[in-house]
Image: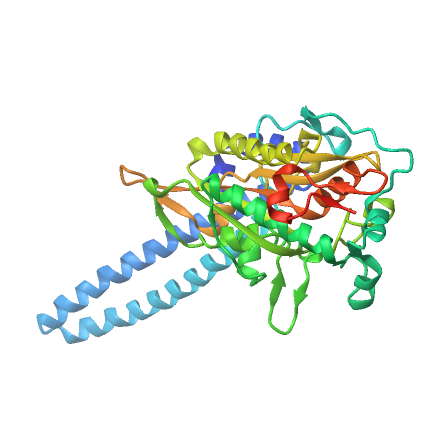
Length: 424
């Protein structure tokens, strides 16, 4: 969430940067927020003045009672009671103004970093890096959903029977490949200095608000109405919220966490060929990496995380490219995002497998996640996260890119985890 102090000092800059995210209501919302803030400050002044006057009168009452002037003291007591009532009313007005400002500001997305390219659709994203050669497949090459059926790896129809579309059942070597990838990604994260956590997969509304899913994406989240809980769309939500309302010390930063969870997304509005097979699911597995750091180091941290995810894709021998997302394709909370896409040889298209984002202090302002500097000052932390990695499209690319006429080859880095070199 943007800070009202920043908006007050930098309104035109905020409007310019929000335009890159194609946020249409910026002028109306920011102007109204500033107007309410001016009213809030005036109300605060009146409240402070009233409290000071009441305190001064209270001292007078004490002196008068001490000197035996009870009648005069009683007269002033009546005035004090009126001031206390006024003070109560002003405090209620103050709280109302603060709530109105909050309601406005939670509708405003994070400001994009200066390097974010303008644009409205994924076609406007900028490719900044490409790695590997696209494999030449045999003439009868198949897409991963056909390979999954051929080798009895994934049963999409059984998932429909059990739950519905977008909830596949992994079987045999397909299930073992899932488990192998999860363990591979976790081991790599631990070796890179991330501490593993296993968080809940249900979170409360405060957690969804803290990382920016609420009130922006409630329609995309599964909701357990009876308990007021949300199924997580990503482990980012519970892991980052570990640090909600926490005051850290500068020497404790950076904090690096990783965690495996299933993820749940309604994917409302998705349809067509791009949702076939593993391309877009309602439930999928993912290993997430999260960092909490200082503002001065967050953009170098983002580059380090991007390189780390790239190293995983290289070990899996997958051709991939890195995109810098344009303003219109970025998430509500992100200041700068890189997407990694792997090449799907049978589908002849790129598949997104990771997003790595710097949220600056947008999430930590909501979370009240702060740190005390070595010289005693209090600052908001910066938060970052990345998929490292999401499994479905990784599996799709592994199956398609490594197929031969009668088998699918497992990348060398995964063989110690799968226990087999080929699927046949």
